[in-house]
Structure formats: C-alpha cells, structure tokens
Image 1 (tube, protein in one colour):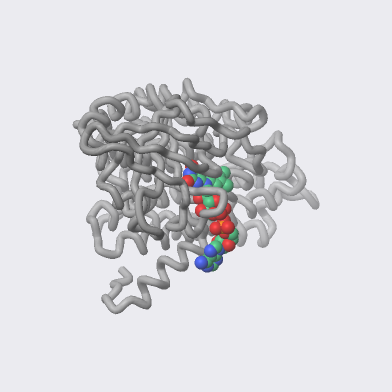
Image 2 (cartoon, rainbow, N blue to C red; image 1 turned 90 degrees about the horizontal axis):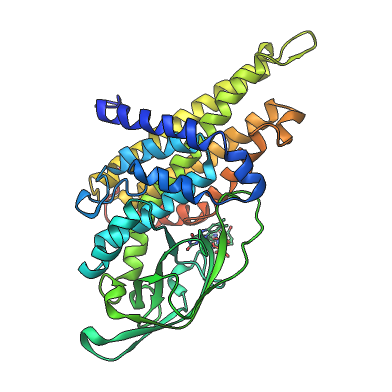
Length: 389
Ligand SMILES: Cc1cc2nc3c(=O)[nH]c(=O)nc-3n(C[C@H](O)[C@H](O)[C@H](O)COP(=O)(O)OP(=O)(O)OC[C@H]3O[C@@H](n4cnc5c(N)ncnc54)[C@H](O)[C@@H]3O)c2cc1C
C-alpha cells in the first residue's frame, strides 16, 4: 500500500496551485461580495483541462482518474470554494454526456464542454422532489416514431447551479412509470424555445455561481438529445452523483485546508493577555483536532475515489461515506477556524466567514448527509457482504 502521490499527480496539483493562486484566490472575496459568476475564469480553467478532468481524451477531456480529479479540485477550492464547486458540477454533467450521449450529441457538445467554451448544469431536483429524487414529475412525452420523433418536455427544476448562465442542461424527466425506472436523461440546450429561468436565488454562500429555477414549457427536443436509453436516466443521474459526491467532498477539503492555513498564521500573530494566542493550550488542542479531522476526511475521500476508479461493487456506499464525513468534518474545521479568529473571524475582511458560508451547503446538496446515511445503512443491512476496508 502506497499513500504517496505519483509524479504526475504532483505535477497536476502544482499546475492547479498556480492557477488557484493567480486566477481564483485574489478574486474570490469580490466574486462573493458582488455575486459575480466568473465565466472568463472558468474558460481559462478549461484551457488547462479543468473542465473535463475525467472526461475521456477522445471527447476532449484529460481522461484522468477520479482520484486525480479529487486532488485537483481540492487545490482549486483553496482559492475559491464556490467557483470550484460549480466547476465540479460542470465536470460531472460533461462526463455524463460523454459517457451516455448519442454520437451526434457527443460530437456537437463534448469538445466545447470539455474546453469550457460551453458550460453545463445538472438538473435533477424539483420544487417537490429533493431527497426523494425518484419522485420527479417533469414529463418528457414522446411525439412520433423512430429517429424523427421528438420529446415534449414540461415541468420545473429547482436550485439549479449555474442555470441562466450555462449552455447545456443535463436534465432528468419522466418518460414512463412512477419511480426510478420511468426516468430518462436529456441534454436540453438552454436556448431552446420554451426554456426559461427564475430569479437568481439569494443565498448564504456559493455566491459566485447563480442558483435558479428552470422552467420547461412544451420544449420540443429531438430524440437524439436523449442521454442513454429510455428509463436509464435515474441510474445515470446516480452514477454522476457518485463522482459528484467525491468532488464536493474535495471542495470541502480544500476549504478546510485554507481555513487551517489561515489560522496557523493568525494565532501566532494575535496576542492577548501579553502572549500569542497560539500559546494557550485550548488553541493548540483545537489546531491538533482540526488537522487530525482534515487528514481523516482526506484519507476517506481518497479511498472512496479509488473505489470508484476500481468500479468496486461498494463504490456508491463509499462515496456516500466520504461525502458525509468530509463535508461534516471540514465544516467543523472551518467553524473552529472562525472561532480562533474571534471577532475578526466574523467580519468579511477575513475569509473565514466565507469559508463557513460556502462549506455549509456541502452538507445539503448532492444528497443531504441524512440521505448519505440512508445509502450506507441500506448497504449495511442488505444480504450481500459489505467489506468495510
Ligand atoms: C445552493 C444549492 C445548489 C444546488 N444545486 C443543485 C443542482 O445543480 N442540481 C440539482 O439537481 N439540485 C441542486 N440542489 C438541490 C439539492 O440537491 C437539494 O436541496 C437536496 O437534495 C435536498 O433536497 P430538498 O432541498 O428538497 O430537501 P428535502 O428533501 O425536503 O429535505 C429536508 C430535510 O429532510 C431530510 N430528509 C428527507 N428525506 C429523509 C429521509 N428519508 N430520511 C432522513 N431525513 C430525510 C433531509 O435530509 C433534510 O434535512 C442545490 C441546492 C442548493 C441549496
């Protein structure tokens, strides 16, 4: 067993670090304050391959492993959690199109998505279907037969990251029976007639990316825009989310690392009662716990990413475990870092309050951490053996 990164991984991380320090970290506070979606910066990230990290090379991506992608997202998130989190969603949606799209759609979209020239959103959640995603009601009614058929889409999607500013909507809609087996996946071009968007939701964090409702009113979509077979959409959505959960967990790791780094500097400068606050045992114990929790979370994320790369039978449960533990522990690390900054942690001149606001939503989206427990418990209680290592 070798826990060291290989030379390639070290090189990828170094290029991510240079980009993060130059193009993300200096601007993150401003993007947050002004709710700016930095599309140009995302395009620059695309030039380095960061928009198609695990999309196959034949489709314009870098063809990296999930573990490699996790290492890169972690570094990028040290500069801007919110922008990196959008990048992870774009990567997930791009990979779904590349993996299950029909040839005509892959040819039309994959290169431009992988290069960042075009951006994608992932559309599963509906106003009345969040955790119970298999109960979605958005309909895709087939009109006609064979290759000339169209789907007519009607319904609404809620909380869609990037919506209104992205070009492709990778969207789950019902083509058949109730439940997961009646769901299909589609690429809906955002400028098709009948697609409209709600207001940019005011929210606690993740302010450098818009979150909007997507409305579909009699959207006529040629059959070639279906991703995968009819009825396969829910399985495809969940396959996307396995990796998505590793990615979001990696964003939490990067944010917690940035919070810890900032705190290590601060506690050795700030003096109270005539000495550095780093000299108080409480500060030292807090720092020790923060570092321990960060490393524990990181190892779990890397293990789950490796399981996903191996196509392990228990990959989904491990991805759920990693997402649960990393987003919970890293939120605590960010919050403890804020506490160690005292009042300065609470004001926006310092990045701590932004780290806390941005990391909080990771416990909610891509499946809440309660739903992660549902997935893990279901696997534990199934008849098949579950090897926990
Ligand atoms: C900023 C932001 C961006 C988002 N981006 C996207 C996106 O790009 N694409 C997309 O499709 N979705 C997106 N989402 C939606 C997100 O995935 C959902 O909010 C999430 O899945 C929870 O659904 P819900 O909000 O409807 O909560 P609900 O499902 O209503 O849950 C409410 C509470 O009940 C708990 N709960 C529900 N069911 C159970 C159960 N069986 N057992 C125990 N507890 C349960 C939940 O854990 C939660 O605490 C985004 C959300 C936010 C806030």
